Length: 117
Image (cartoon, rainbow, N blue to C red; front, side, top):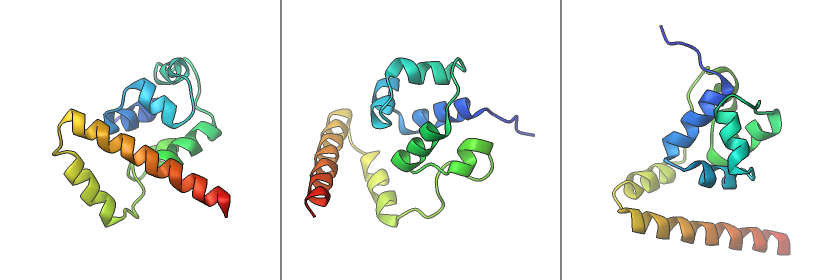
């Protein structure tokens, strides 16, 4: 029987699944590295706002994050995302960093275009 984990432990699991440092993961959800570290160390509680941001930013299943029921990621995965993940894993570290920089640029550009509408 699997031992139930806390929300904070599941947040750590999500970060580790992506292979992100605390700094990189925290930047994605607009937290400081130290605040995220305190959450992961069970010194702070992850409030509903933080949970929602993690779910939206990283595609995490909110029900799983709050209760450990279901799967870590939303079931409705875009097959294109699966292809990106598959190919991304084949790249060396330098190319992965380059892809992430390009993706950040594209997201930023998309947000600017949306604001102009």
